[in-house]
Image 1 (cartoon, helix red, strand yellow):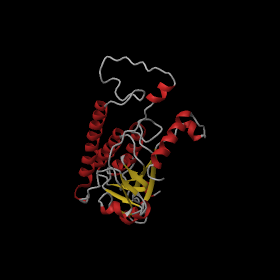
Image 2: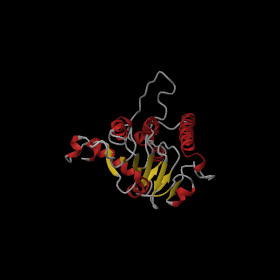
Image 3: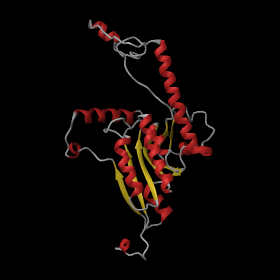
Image 4: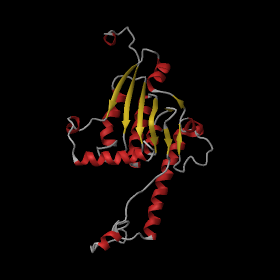
Length: 264
C-alpha cells in the first residue's frame, strides 16, 4: 500500500539483470536482440536506486558483447542510475566486457576475471577428405572469398589477415577496458595477454573493486529495506516445457565448452 500513498516514501529497490551463459549471435546465448527488452525494463520500470548485473559468463561474440555493454551504459547515463556488477564463477573475455559496463565490479574470492584477448578457432579437414577420395570444388569471383576454407590447406596470407583482424578486435577490447577502469588498472604486463585472474589477484590487477555479494552489498549501500526486482532473458516456450531440440543441444555443448576453458 505504501507506493499508493503520496506522502509515504517507498523503500528503495535495485533492478537485477541476470547475465548467465555464453555470449552468442543467436538467441540460444546472451545476445543483444534478446537482452534489449530486459535491459530497457530494468532501467525504466519505476526509479531503481541502482541496476545490478549478476554475471556468470565465459565470453563469446565481441560484437554482441559491445552492443549489450553499450546499451547498459547508454541507459545508465541517460537515467543517471549507478550500475554494479557482481561476478559469480566467471566474467572472462566478453563476460568481462559486460562487467566493465558497470561503475563498480565486485567478485567472489573464487571468481575468475580477465581473459582480455580474442580467439578464433576452427578445424582443418583437407587431409581427411583427400584420404576419402573427396574433391573440394570451390569457384569464386574474388581472391579472398574462399579464405580460411577448412577443406583447403591454410595459406600464410590468410593467416596474416586473420591475425590482423584479431589484433584490431583486441585493441578495441583493451581500449574499452582502459576507458571504463581507468587509473584503477594496475601496471601488470599480463593484463591484456588473455591471462585470467582468480579472486584477489583480479582486484590487485584492477579488474575488480572488491569482494562482495549482491544482496549484502546492496543492503550496505541502500539500507536493509532495499528490495530487488529481477529481470532475465526469456527462455523459448519449448524449452520451458523441457523439450530438447537440435539447436538447444548444440548451444548447450558450445556453452559447456566455453565454461570448460576455465575449468568450470
